[in-house]
Amino acid sequence: MNSPPPLMEMIKALIAAPSISSVSPRFDMGNLEVSHLLAAWLEDLGFRTQVIPLIGHRDKANVIATLGSGDGGLVLSGHSDTVPYDEGRWRFDPFKTTVSEGRIYGLGTSDMKAFLALAVESAREIRAGSLKRPLTIVATADEESGMDGALQLTPGQIPARGQCLIGEPTGLVPVRQHKGILMESIQLQGRSGHSSDPRYGNSALEGMVRVMDWLMDYRRQLGEQYCNTAFDVPVPTLNLGYIHGGDNPNRICGACELHLDLRPLPGMEIELLRETISENTREIAESRGLDATFESLFAGVPAMETPAGAEIVRLAEAVTGTPSAAVAFCTEGPYFNRMGMQTVVLGPGDIAQAHQPDEFLSLDRIEPTLGILERLIRRLCME
Image (cartoon, rainbow, N blue to C red; front, side, top):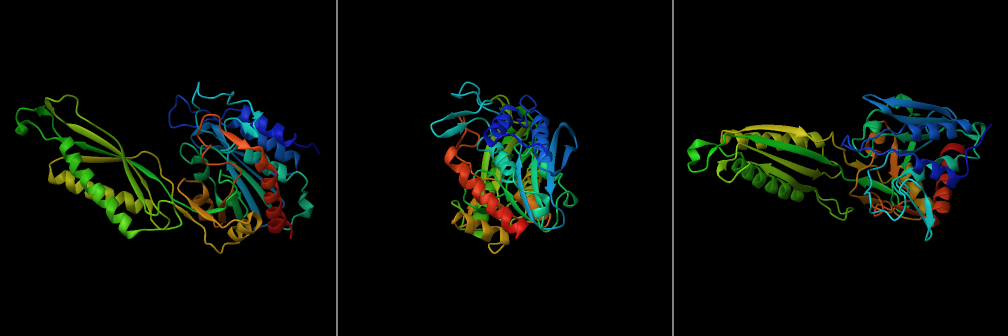
């Protein structure tokens, strides 16, 4: 049986394989090189490995690799894509790992290719015959631009009733709750005309002012109705991030578009929020003789809440010596929970490094991470 290369060589190879995903076709690329590297290493360790193409993405794939058989056990998961990088703002080549100042620099070191290498490393000495329950390693595609990889996972691909750890950057603090996200576009269509007489047109921009007034009141209502003090910002947030309408001061605005970002707490349903915004906007538009249309800028991510008493949460707290926390950023955790798993988010990187120039992973996080993963594998798959 062959063996994967040493850990630092695996990290170096993953960073050197660009796998940027973006909603902009200008930056978007595939992840097949990363996927095939991971699949080959895991096959060398005796895992049953699948590279599963994403529907609608000929150059993107998920990797699912399982050692052992049966239900339960542990899933170690991470995404194999990265965000784009700021050209000219890095001190180091983003696709070459540079070790300096006690850190490993490179695009994806913190978020989160290094974790995938650590997951492989944690399984290096394990043999299928020693497992009572399976160990599964999952590498998803397209997390940074639409969660398509996680959305296309199915329960039959992963052992049922298992525990899941997602290695997103949490500074080795276990996370059992995070907010969700939806981003929506609202478009109002009116009638342009000469600004000298309001009777010549029907201003979509003035109609949008009324919609924004309602949205600000809705934000206040949500803050009064929902509160979770586990979060630094304990209420849902609603941000109006983009608006455009009209083309000249002397023309009544015929069309106006608004983009908003809403971050719901656990227990809040994305579709219900969308429906509420849509229904109230249509009422305002109809009252002013305007047409309203809506577009979800992406599918959205549900909020995540794994029960405090879940086995994976209790074990993660025990092996780290740290209480579980809540974060504002989103992960693939809700999709694993929906498949009947119990999920905690726990990784060696820091969210402050994610999506930043000169992204890095501190070298002193490597051994603690391996220790955590090995203890969880032993407890959930071998004992």
